[in-house]
Length: 165
Image (cartoon, helix red, strand yellow):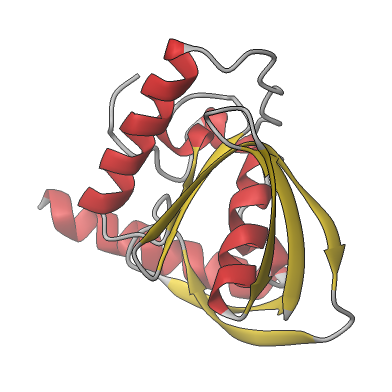
């Protein structure tokens, strides 16, 4: 496990992540690597599968406030949703309009084993839903129509080819 962000096509991104049974030094080391990777990529959130670890851990960074959550779950969502452009560290350089719930209530466990509840709205709600999706092997492109997904992936592949030339 490093701090390299796994990109589209890596099978770890499509697996349902395993629950963490014990918060130990390994769990804390994974969280550190996640924070490093997220900061290096200027992200607002990251899930453990994105650094190749199939465990239910997410990190959120909004308003310079870090939240490291183990076994997070969305407890409740609003009826209202909003559609805006969304991107992903694992599919860099492209984005697409995705419909997400406007507000969410998240429950998880901190690294010091305290259960916390976070009420998120707007960008925080979107980031929470996006990272929880990663824990379930779901990518934001899965919300697009087949034609939109194909177009976006063609754009992504083209940008990746340009990087290697």
